[in-house]
Amino acid sequence: MGTGSSSENALRVVPSSDVFSNKEMVALKSAWDDNGPEGSLLKDRHGFTHYIIDRPTSKKGMMQPSTKGIIVLSHGLGTSVRVYHQLAAILVDDGYTVLRYDFYNHGYSKYAGGLFGKDVWIKYTVDLFVDQLEDLLLHVCAETKETVVGIVGHSTGGVVAVASNARWRTKEAKRDVIPSVVLANPALFLFKKPFVQASADMFPKTLLFLFKIIPFLRFLVKKNYEEAGEKGFAIDPRTNQAVYPDAKNKQSMVTRRCFGRVKGEKEHPFIVPGIYGAGAFTLSAKLLAGHRELLLGNLTSSPDSKVHWIWGNLDLTVPYTENIGEAEGWAKNYDNFSLSTIDRLGHEFFFEDTERVSKDILPFLNKS
Image (cartoon, rainbow, N blue to C red; front, side, top):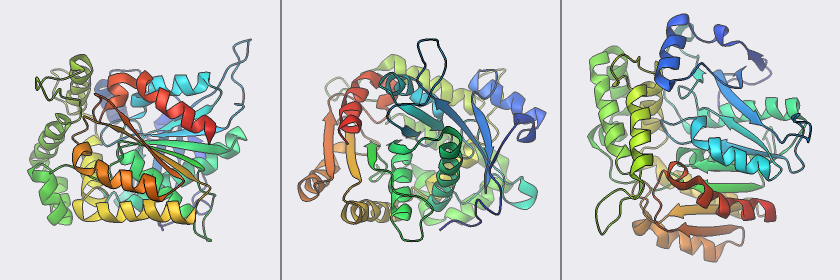
């Protein structure tokens, strides 16, 4: 379980001026090329969570409660709520309220633990991810008077969905399990990592300390993330060319802006610590088998909670070809687990073709 509790640190919405210094806000706007955070900022037990609630509108154009409940959208490592802009609109059109949020040190969320609340170089464990989501759901369900009926977790967000339900199926849990779980290319298997990420698996605390005190070394985190990002988009095995080159180039530019690689633009102040911390302390190779065990435990212990895994067959980040057989075995052994393959899409399929992916998600959510 995570440290602290919601009761010890009252949940409340705060203005951005209470979260970011002027210097941080200037850098964040520059990195994201926008005018600041849309939605709200929640003060929770570990920091500040940026979230957006998308709701259906009446014929008069007023936002109103949904007829179906809340779907949570949980993003992947190094991205933000932006990945789900189109999917959120599709789900709202179908009658759902949608909750999008940024992980700590991603987008406009900020970890505020450590010495004087200023240390963003953290051991970003799976418990920290679950603590954040737990606090957010406690607040949002009270705010909207609606119930969470499903979650879509992409990549790292899939691990968060699995780990959250694993906590919430215990007798001591603060909330019920989420009944419908969509795992979209979940990071339960991973490719052979680049050098720094592989080193982090062996010496996570040492590298965390070095990156924290020697800013120059942080270029290694950026380099490795960009190298891993090359595997994220579908590559045609016949031509070795990107299937969706425009989407790949667009997202590459977003990453370059966040890393301060675009001339005249400022670096995102927290994204590098966020990427390293989660990669080393949640997504390390030695932890992946444990995440898969949590999934199987959920399937056994929570038969009323249904899980649907969607996998792009050109996914190299969560390698499809090498691991599809194991997932197919789960589909045979568990009545509450289903599996879909989407042809010619890669790991980042929400950037490639959200509409195609949504046609697989909606029937599952509506049937569950």
